[in-house]
Image 1 (cartoon, rainbow, N blue to C red):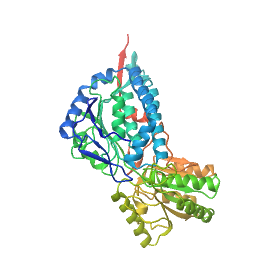
Image 2 (image 1 turned 120 degrees about the horizontal axis):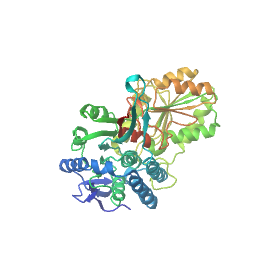
Image 3 (image 1 turned 135 degrees about the horizontal axis):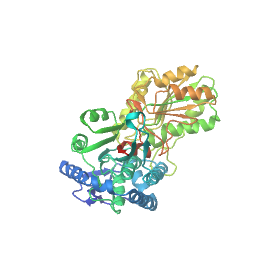
Image 4 (image 1 turned 180 degrees about the horizontal axis):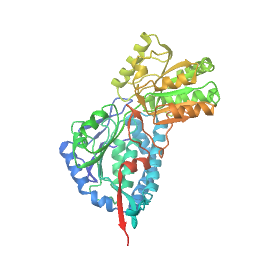
Length: 476
């Protein structure tokens, strides 16, 4: 069970300022807890405190940063089931998926602990002409300064971890705004950080309104804004001024199944079902478009439709449930309307059912028109589209016919096709032999086109949170 109330964290300390934010159990719709909700004054205080903490955080030695991160690993490991249950309640995430996310939270902090003592630099050979003889150069990476983080509802632990853990490793103070619908996981992370010896002002975790969070975007004392969420991120970038901005704005992930996919059909279906429908499709790299070669299409469609139809929907606390609630009824209604519109335009439904509130059965549609919202936009729900192709290059062209480019999957036993996909698919990552939903927390993760800019993955985030400082020495 969740606590009755949770404070926010301002300059490392818990503040039970109010209980204004009601957090719902996404399955029952009933109130699960209440959380302190920050106002603009609190956000401003957090920025001031973080700005004052810059020198102390930069001076906080790499081994001390590592120790903080290792403490987090220990405490999260001790509180695994509590974290998973909180995630299950506040996000409606099936308990098996919730436990998986807690594991990734721990992995991300563990990776960051290792990286904290590996932030280095390089020696530069400056003696490139007679005028530069006797000069030596070297660089080291130094913290960029105050970071502002804004995270979405769908991975309330691990998307927070991918910002917070690298910031600590890099020596950057930060202010985090977690999603108002799912703030509890971030506040539990705050509880654990408050147990450590981080310098005063090193972190603040403030659930707040988008309006009050505008300071995190516009305040010139912030050196980096890292935002994960919807396409509003481009507007935030336009308002951010001179600060560095990294954005992860979602996708419309496609998966190609070649004539020889290189995997048994049952294993292939299992991975496609996982990729398209895990945590009710509320993932930026959820499989939304499937292109299958006509040689395998009939058998694949039949088995995939049967598997989707058997997915159990219900209470996310049930160990056997695969499809839990969507984050709210508006989200479920939107996806349902896109499905119905596609059907009216000529698509055929192979699996699916009627929406009940924010519960939407898993759907599979065939031959969705290319101009349909369900094909062109990010569905962010338990639905996938499938169609046949005859030529591999045509399949790549269809994958690229999208405003998004986060990750793509390719099942093929043909090495030339695998390399061609890597060369030509316009995405931040190409996953061969699996679905685009695959992610490991130390790999570069991010997209192109409307999917954003910059990369997460601990060492890649640390690179954004630090900058090179040059030293030149002239010797006699």
